[in-house]
Image: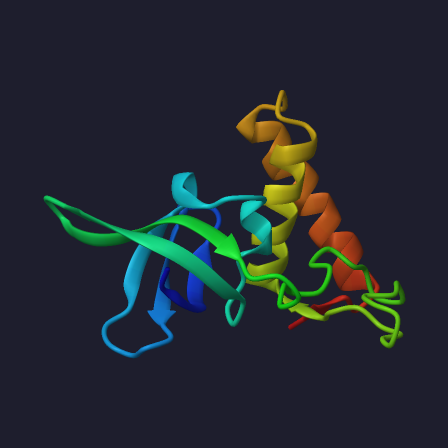
Length: 136
């Protein structure tokens, strides 16, 4: 079974790229082919996968995080413990914050309308900016 690292993954668009451990061109991956929560598939995360060949080229399927190499908690707020050795959370760019918050809202409150999600996101971003949780 091939292994590699997540090069990038856009949770909003539901697609990304994996760089194979053995080298070669990056391989595409779609959110439907991820095993587990898609928010855990962050750049640098080690994964294993199968390869499926189709009309549009090859893609990674059955993509799984490798044990012991999963990223730290992604939604830790500044001041929360990310793991036993850390004492602070991430400071995100505005784009990263918006993406993370949007995914969290959709997973937590899937019945909200797009307008409600956008309004909630705006208020959360304003709050996060006031606490300097976002890089400007």
